[in-house]
Length: 138
Image (cartoon, rainbow, N blue to C red; front, top):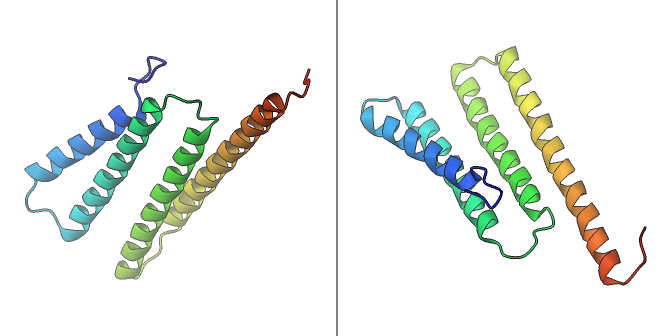
């Protein structure tokens, strides 16, 4: 649990990775592409778990650094999904328009989330600098 009483990304990442690993372990005859997909999803879950552990254990103000890290994790997960989808599309010699729509939508959302996080961090860091400099801001 985070300090706010909400489940942290650490818990969510660990739970997701554990459940995927259990599902993977109980299905020994999966196709190779499914095993690769499970491995990527478990890795993404472990990244979120690591991030959540880092964010919860910080004893200093993060000034929205956690949001920026989460934004980059989102972009990384989108890139992994995009590469996987592209590989499957190339192997099948067929590119579905719905897949292109999903990839573009997720990419725009990941980029927008990262941009918002970077802007929020910039505002907080600028405010910290103003306050540390003794400027009278009303």
